[in-house]
Image (cartoon, rainbow, N blue to C red):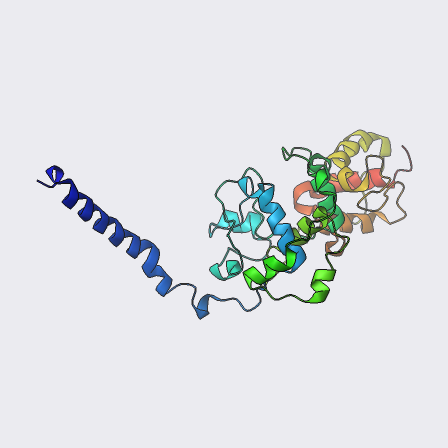
Length: 291
């Protein structure tokens, strides 16, 4: 009986475990990570981006944010940002990979594809609730300190990433915040992006139906506070975005901007989330030249 002969039992158990390991862990490397898996557009990290990645790991960001968009339609829709699901070739320069499986916060594999400016990232890292009121993310304002570049060149050599003297010089005067933002803005940007086709929208009224300003002011203030205040200021004075108090733009112009957003400025579209009625009320409030 094998259970009465521990030596034979241990040997056979080892053989079984090694067979399973070979089939599931070793053999697959014969047909994955081949030339067909490589993505030519994916580039190694620059010294600043690599420093940011190291800070990302140091602060444990991967404990709350995954970096892999699964093939599920819901995942692609929510986190793909036009880049689709994750492919193995995207992680060829990630040592270690940060795929993760827990999502206390959103997946960040494609965060670089979102039209978020460095100023937005900085404000979000310093005070997450100032741009996402419901966020439970802690503040990382302490990243506003000089970046330690003692080992930057050594890291690049160890990882066999290409770099230049200019890349290293670019680190001078940079903060840990700068490095973190540089890393975040790279994520997902090396892959081809499929622009979503414009959805067919129901024609909207050509003129603002809410001419009674006082009747919608309170509701519009609430909409503004939820959707706009984090970037344009509580009093429409302008912070990350432009000042909006008593805007000189026409109602139609404001409606179009709010509905479609301004990708170059990092402003997202609100057409689907707010809808026609709320956008017009918001336009009415923005046009008001009151406190």
